[in-house]
Length: 349
Length: 77
Image 1 (cartoon, rainbow over the protein chains, first blue to last red):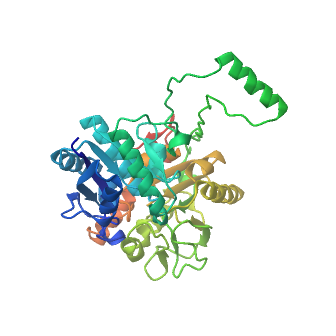
Image 2: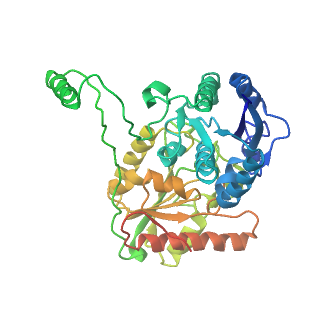
Image 3: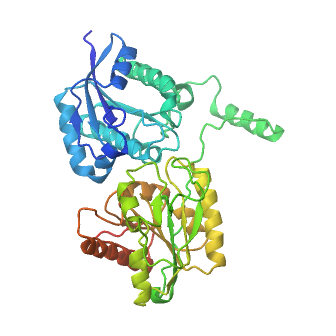
């Protein structure tokens, strides 16, 4: 049998082009296979070969979604592949979004077999888990040594037309697919057994987990914004110069509350960003690009808003766990309510 | 964070560039912004024009806060 032709999609970082300063690199086919693709090719062995690696900068992809998608699609088509593998993206949010988008696109447009790999809390998981097969990885590239063999194993399974097992068996994210299986015992028996276990207080595994919908209904609109007290919260990591609370550049363990009552605007001299997940050049030169202090002060003076709350809140939304973000937001909300803040502008990078 | 602050009872407008993430995390009022490293600015513009752009975005956010929404709403141009 001829070797299966695989296209690999990766970002600028794993292509060895550079970090945040190169996140605007346009889609292209790598001239030589990047190291990560070579490693994957080795693991795929004799049954498959990587015929092309398509590379795109994470910011470029997410900011130019439609054009990036069509360019990348053309590049993939030209390679005439049997399969596409994207990532692994670990906990890199923009990369995870790109991997999910590319996999879904080749499935829809080319009917191509494809999958990706990333960490459970990568935003790409929630967006794409229903449509895309995602192998679970650790949250950082330190887990590469474990992730690549899992990726190769899955690729070979799919190439050989083998059965893909349950998410537990395969280490994949649950897609919510239901498949028919033969069971030793009929349904009524299994249900009664589960009930008995439940009554005894023993652990059991349901065959039909209920989906969790966690949505918060929109709060009513502000009646008169010219009377409203408005606060700014950001996940973009804007902090006073030199980051007094030492908020971490990724996986932040805290948030900060910063007094802005004496500021008419934010500037390079007094504020900066602590965020390590995007190119900080623009936010450092002019922090108003993330926390629009200059404009809000103007609007306050013109009476277009009631007032700007004297503090803003900031954390770094880069690989920060959902559990921590929830905790910070609960604390922040308490403080906002205690200070009669009417509405929040939350900015994200 | 958007969701938890809104859950506590305060309306939130989320200004961000990657709208699909905002939709997934459950923001109800969403303003699409310019770019990931500079959501509320554009370094290629003159300072005055850039501030004007920022002001338009913030004004849009204020309109969103004054608008009743039924479920998640992206305020496009």
